[in-house]
Length: 277
Image (cartoon, rainbow, N blue to C red; front, side, top):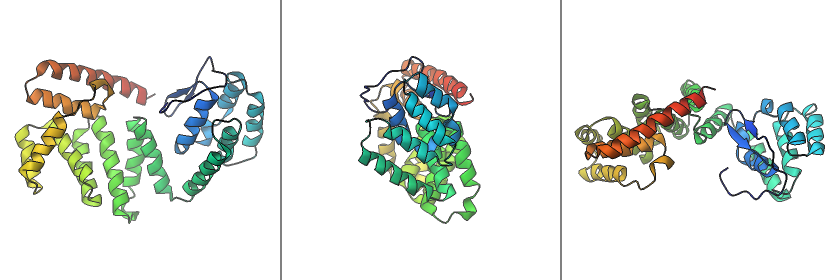
């Protein structure tokens, strides 16, 4: 999980897996944390007998399981089931649960397109790039109906991030430029140049920078940012790893280049298999 979770309840022998994100949880506390931070990715179909049985048998919480079974037959709202789970223990305070319920009410008032973007953003955060891309593409197909240019630009930006991490570099460049045109965000423009740096030579990158009316200093800053990453390669996204690998190649460091490319290709194969399940 994303933070240290102190677990005082029984730990399951068999984890429960949320199939759409592939996240495995072992305790009631982990279940609460996942619910609190991933509501947009939890559909009512995920709240089924499979989860109730796991709560009953693996967490040894039969009373909660029975309440959920009864509630599931009565309420059409996912929120009611999730709040029931959060209220069953002490991982979140009553005030925190109220805050959660209020946030859920605000979410329900969002437009369908806004809710779809939040869902896609959630999948993007879990590196489910194919799922995220499909949702972003659905939003983009409705572009003519969207008046908020910044919102639409952010959709294009995140669609580009998904494309870059799947090494769909041509789409990534196209979407980053479209994002910048709509939202004026320098991060979208900078990301476009990062993809160019990962797919073209230095002179092409310099030409693209100048074509956008930017200075030589801007070009130098881009090159420095690509080369300055100190993160361990295994902790980086595929997109960032590729940037670093290209930097190694540009500076004729073929040993590091080959090592990084081997890791990238292995991770790509693993993630692709995982995403199509």
